[in-house]
Amino acid sequence: METTSFVRNRYWILRHGKSIPNERGLIVSSMENGTRAEFQLASEGVQQAELAGELFLKALKESNTPLENVRICYSPFSRTTHTAKVVASMLNLPFEGPQCKVMEDLRERFFGPSFELMSHDKYEEIWALDAKDPFMRPEGGESVDDVASRLANAIAIMESEFQGCAILIVSHGDPLQILQTVLHAVKQHIASSSNGLASRVKAARVPSILSQHQDFALLTGELRAVI
Image (cartoon, rainbow, N blue to C red; front, side):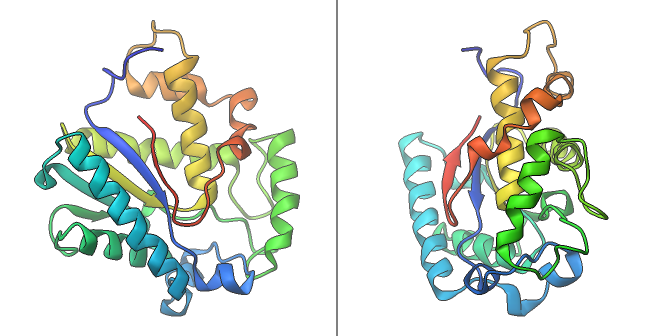
């Protein structure tokens, strides 16, 4: 395996805890709906976020990472903001301080108006489309590659702003699956001749790689070290 010398930080990802839309079986993917307070975490999701915070703190201690080197970057949706706030509390970090950063590029994948506020069962239709062509958008929504593009932008911003940090990315199922797919390819398959992170990510944004994002599914409240 290649080293990760092409990145300046270490990254963990966390899917938000179980949310009220999860409990209700609803797709909530637009910024307008996703930022509504009524769509934050369910009580079980708060417990999941607390556990994730404990696990992250344990990982930091095991790697001798001081808390001042921690950054929490999170999606502006209610369920991710709520999750990030709980984790920051578990780490005793001020949520309104400079170590916590909201990033619009980490928002949920917009599945389009025909899926918004519909049943979770309709995800299967989107994922079947993704497997066939990750560059094809659900009507009015985002393709896998659209999401990969903005997540690559988010990582580039983190890499430019932070150095030597342990960065926790708090986001959503599809975006984090897509991010893992790209980073896995960057680490495992992309020729070392493409040295910079941006060129490696660009080389990974091909159908044969992006169509595999379902292989990297996360449970609600699941924490993973990725790079």
